[in-house]
Amino acid sequence: MKRIDLKKVSVARSNTIRDINRQIVLNYVREKGPISRADIARETNLQRSTISLIVSELKKFGLIEEVYGESSGGRPPALLTLPTAQPIAIGVDLGTVRTVVATCDLTGRIIEREEFETRRDVERTTSMIIDSALRFIAKNKRTIEGIGISLPALVDARDGTVLYSPHFKWRNPQVIQKIREATGLSVTADNDANAAALAELWFGRPEIRDVRDFILVFIENGIGTGIVLDGQIHRGKGGAAGEFGHMRIGTDAPVACAADSRECWEAFASERAALARYLRGAGSNDGSGMSFIELVGLAAKGDKNALRALRETAKYIGIGIGNLIQGLSPEVIIIGGTIVQAWGLIEDEIRESAEGVVCLGIGPTRIMASTLGSEPTLMGAFSLVLADKFASISI
Image (cartoon, rainbow, N blue to C red; front, top):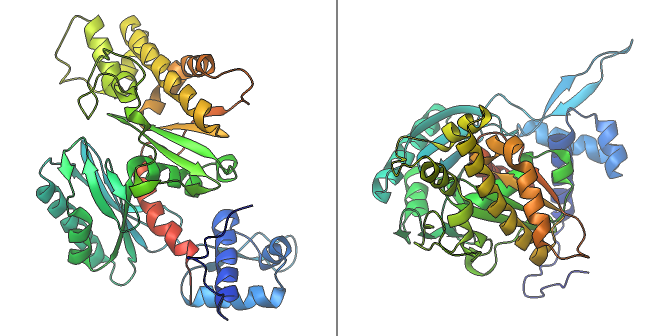
């Protein structure tokens, strides 16, 4: 049973139940559409008349549309689905190397996108994001409802304040405030791992959407974790929960983490660590011309040094995951980021290493790769806008 915080409780108003029922119907259409009115009524136990009234309201405001299914001899069945004709949100994936600004519809389908190199100068990067956002807004007048931003930083999600980015060394940058002022739109931000975890809840495979407790381990140049407890992102005090990339797991790592330590999980298990191991094995110190994707390609072709570097890195990924399982006992651990492109080469090492850390008696935790594709953090940026819209629909 959850403890009720009486300071946050408000008495239900007369329209609260109607708003909740709209959310229920809209989310059924999102998750199970195309779906008939009869199926929604059957699954929700709402009266058919209530469903019809809500559907009419949602259609009027362009939140759902009607399509016709295949006929089995009589009149084709009328089915409800989300509209896909117009952009509803702007997503900004502010990455360590590149930034993507894109629009999506209510289903999260990308409609348009722009991409540019991320600058360490926060003012320059912010200006480029604003320019892209304004172009999209000008093209889609009155349809864009908000902007979601995913970035590698500590974010206080209560007010969208970016507190600190270890990679860029940005302290209290006014990124969110300036984008909000320039566009006049609502802007929601979160760190990349939390955003990717939200995307798993929103767009992930059904077996993940139904899981109440899981951890998303996001691995690229660094490591971040998004923690989902009871179906909600757990942010902790000041949004600092999930910074497991900086837990100590050893000494003398092949690279320093973003905080200049060689003892952190990130320093042992990131893509940079894998590249450093490969270069050391090749007798080279210059890795400026090699990407992680190229390393994976070499390993896939049977390059022994590349395979060794990936599998050594996988061992440390597993050690960190074992610690997460030991401490939090989630149902599932999902691994996301570019690292999943090497999943077939490192899966066994990760599992074996994690199992070696976990004490006997703790129930099994599934470990799997994300199925969100190559841009989970962009999908997370979209999710920041869409999740709020679907959770707070009021007409």
